[in-house]
Length: 247
Length: 277
Image (cartoon, rainbow over all chains, first blue to last red; front, side):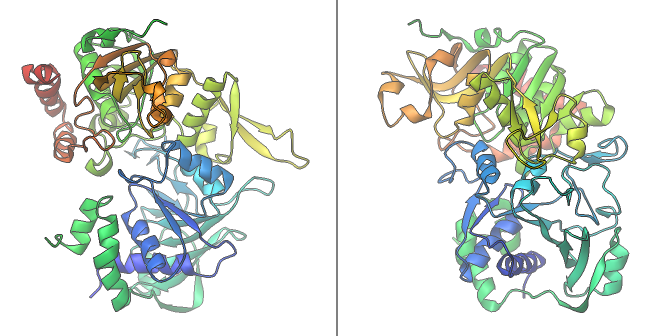
């Protein structure tokens, strides 16, 4: 039986491998993103050839110029896939990492923008991930734009959000229309339940299936070699999702 | 050549004037917590703290101690321990003016300063509310492009003081930070760089080809003090890890003013804390 986290990992791994004009050869994952990191590892386990740079890895970190190197790499287009979230995400894929209210941050203040205002433009593929799927997170319009979902023509931008993965469903994003389309439902969700939990307008795919879960082999890999590889970087997450470590 | 002086920790802290613009590295990158505790003991005031590029535990301590009058940073977080409690309280009360940034803009502003140029361009950011909140940043059309190509310019940033914790210093005042080379950029850009180190080593680090790539040269170092376990409760490269229990406890206790004061009494003003340094 797969856990919710393992299902989300499998859903993101499917998106990484999905046909896309920009294939993923190099993905970077930050400290707060254990589920995306596991998803990249699962995509690799399934056969994709992807270099994964774990930004917070303490020993054997791929970067030798400090964290600045991440942004230099992204600036040059040497990172193909990054993951972003937010306290709010709206229907045009604008993301808010700073806070809510007017002025922004007066209702709830979050840590801040981090690298999002830069990475959303310079990395060709972004997968948006936010487990909480509720009208307070998925809003008609974000209170603060940390980074816009789309840009006017003539703005340097390598790509956009490929998709938004939540605890209820997967949306794909069309940058031409600046709109999300509901692509698949996680087990137990319906068109109606997602509609009620979503604050922004979106389209629905004509054929709406269930989000594909992890296979038995996926689960064995996640709980075995992938866990072993990521445990140092995400100890709390691994203990919670995969249980106590075998002695 | 005159090496930078080797001082006691409190004497190093005395070199940070009230009102200074102070650059601090983030929690996972050689943050000088012992020095920050010494600054709080000396009652430093009115600092403009710059997170390079983000802020964490040390900045939260300074905020709670009432030492910060302005904060420029891309984010404030205690990582796995959660939100920075004194930052969160200060933002809620509106007591702390903050200039929000984004990580690469902080690095770029320091890189401009280290090159001695007035600004540097940076991709992205266009169309964000961050840009709207930064009148000190400019947008120009790329002068080398045939087509319209707007790009953001970030002005050079030269902090008054860079505060860093390094693994070691030699007697010439060279300090070793290993792969955390963005710390060298802070030192290159700052007017003064004050460094605490885990230990003093014999010999000259710049004469060792294996060590030299991780060195900040004495040229940039203003003064050094020894602070063993000087990043605690944060970690130092592969020397020692972060004390996650202590960070979790701080995140919990410092949510209230009384809890924060108790933490200061125990770990900043307490006799045990002083003895440990």
